[in-house]
Every structure is written in C-alpha cells, then in structure tokens.
Length: 173
Image (cartoon, rainbow, N blue to C red; front, side):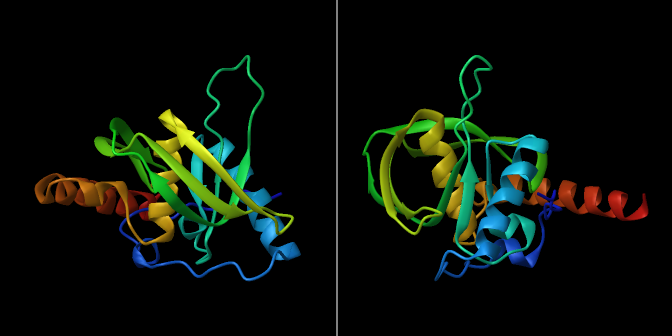
C-alpha cells in the first residue's frame, strides 16, 4: 500500500467528470487499497479517485468515528444515487482537497446508492446521517463538483484564494 498525494483545489482534474470503472483489475484493487490508506492517514472519512489524480469512478469511505466500534472501510465503484429522501440535513463539510476550510452544506438526509464492489458484484445500501453526507460528497467529486460549489460565490472565491495561497506556500517549502 502506498500513500498517494492528494490534489489541492484549484486543480483542473477536480472539476472533471471521472470515467466509469469497466473491470475490476489488480490496478483498481491497488488504487482502492492505496486510497483507503491515504484517507485514514490524512485523516478523513472519504476520498474519491480524482482527488489522487486518477480519473475513475471509485471512492472509499469509512464514517465510523467511535473508537470502540470496528472500522467499516467501503470501496464503491461506479456509485450512483438511486433514491434520495425529500428530508434534508445540513452538515458542516470539509474536504481533503480543500484543507482546513469548512462550510454548512444541505443535502438529502437519506440516500440509496448502488455500486459495484471489488468482486464485481452489484451492491445497494441506504445511507443516513454522516454516511449519507459523505457518500454524496464523494459522488460529487466523481462528477467534478466540490462542496464549495454549493456556497455563495463570494465565500467560494475567498476559499479558492486561500487554497491558491496554500499551494504557493507549499511549492516554496
């Protein structure tokens, strides 16, 4: 397993729609394993392949925050929301590609998602709470959308400028 560098906004790859996974290959399994390690190391609760510069519809997540509960690492290939509740939830979201920036985002409180697992089998599950927010946030990444795209333009521009400054500082270091 390898830690992969996480792209920082603004990066044009974060705004592109990712390509479907056509087959579960050793390369896909390695990517999933690397992404889980990268996500846990960051630390984060979700990571989409475009965030590590791979333009494929793969995401990983694990929203178990309670140290007394077993981790639940999930790998979703070609995930799609098949149902969303009318009820909405607001969560303060952050993103590994937009470090140390957070904002309230309103999304459906519950979603049903269908995806392919690493065995090539179709899976489906209904998510709520933090899991619902996380899976929708990560699917947005696969569609070239960031959580800041839900914000008012001025707030989005402020965050983008902070990220440009952060990237300049990191480049100098």
